[in-house]
Length: 87
Image (cartoon, rainbow, N blue to C red; front, side, top):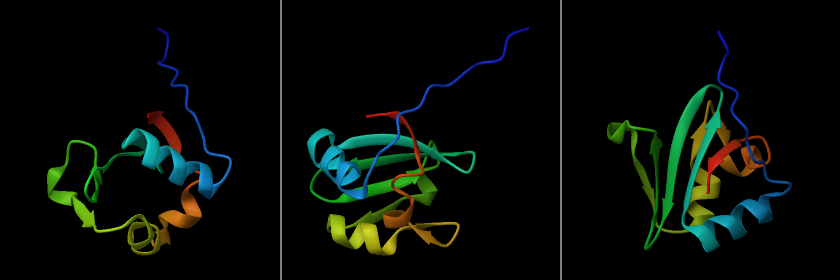
């Protein structure tokens, strides 16, 4: 049997992550074997994929970058380490 091989994009910088979020408005990514869904419209909404009970809401990108953490690490520091599934 063959395993499923996932191909991922990555960001080369925090600014590239911010620019993509502003341009696309929707990013799905994986970090530490968990998938996340990130939406940016009037505010920023993020949750573990298919787990709406984990949703968090932020008024600005700056607030999101400073306050949202995965395993205690701010997303600002993880932007170049996340595995982008969709954007």
